[in-house]
Length: 292
Length: 292
Image 1: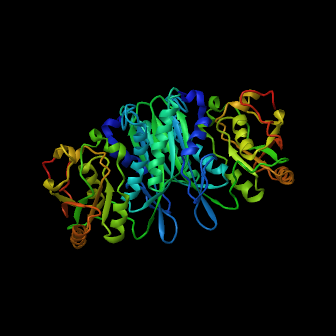
Image 2: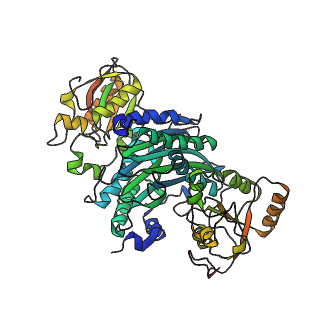
Image 3: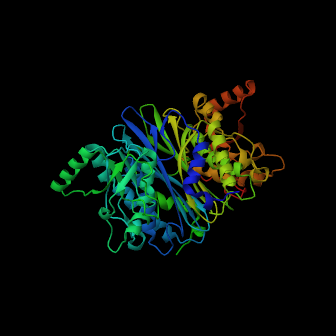
């Protein structure tokens, strides 16, 4: 009998897909940053959920406001990665009955602050007793059908970009105060239509593989060009995760236009880090760089 | 510094309401079975979330399929209580890395079976490592504006009904295999328009108080008429919880029509258990029946 550590999370997701009943209202189900659902003529509805656990994604020694911030920010990042904007959230909180009310209030203040910044309304939730703290955020969003950007659209020749420097997120507390790249994503989908997009939560090499696998392509990654935070080595930048930057691919012509645009306008900066190839075997292996 | 056991869950919900930013798109936020959100001309969108924890809401000794069933059924019951129907769910699962894959598969099979029965599509989720198992379901639903039924509409003279016998849910495993009262709720909102409705998860007396408080009314409860499961005493029926029956109020004329209807048609049965009064002080106190 296999246990979960042998199967791994992505093995599990493949198992679960089999059980998921799908209606024709579901444009995209399990396997992207958010589910894409029928909504109206112009837009799709987006739905995502993220669970954070004490001693896995945060510790009691971290800032309670930061923990709250992170809980909602992760989900906003998922919605941004689809090209959409977030709307309504529900928050489930599991806490010990001995938990201080101040700590819980601070978690909610952290959630509220980022909710306001991104025009998200927190509309409900659930509170239960648990030994270790657990936070789950489910977030709704919306996206114009023409702006929807999934993981499976990368094509041979497309250029690969990342929205910011990687690595060191845990050490620098970036994971507790990052601002999801919503504005950048909305700018991109409106003006440059990326062919594929996702956010980096598990690390560049692992997450990039999701795009490659979904799109049936390979990559030639320019390791020297991968932007890194101060004091961060290549391996860390590739594998550490919790960066919450966006990874996207874009046609070569548009890539050149994007580079021109950002040379003139210093609003955002997008880092070109590689080229999509047709060779599906050219995929980075997490924690192994020999194939790059 | 207060801790959570002193404040209690409903104290906490009051604290949290203060932090919840609200947009004009939110018809009802925190404080009902589900949030009610702007959708289209005819319908509202409903959104609810429920978290279940090992050793609080279930144990490892219980049926894994039952645990999965319960996780989604609780949320379907919330959507039914608003008068709507469920559509899309996302499931977050926290499990230990030593968990057997079979146990997890069975949980998902339990979720899938009830999802199919209620035409719910499971469209995504999150899987993380935790020491004790945690399941969170966030569920979307829809309701015609004319069918929306909240907790705050009970009026003096309205009759109080419950959809089925109460008590003994944990002992009988009802909480692992109950079928949410969706059909009954849809029948009621279409043909009898209840003035208020909610589902009983924490126990009749506590949950009834939510209706009374939200509506600013009291109740004269007919204790002898409260339907109970076999071997269940009054105190248990009033306070035990996990019944997932619906509690609703309805104008006296409609109540009579409802009684006539169910005398002729043996499809559903609704139990009349009391009358709404104008006296806000006439509210049952949980675990204390002296005021009934």
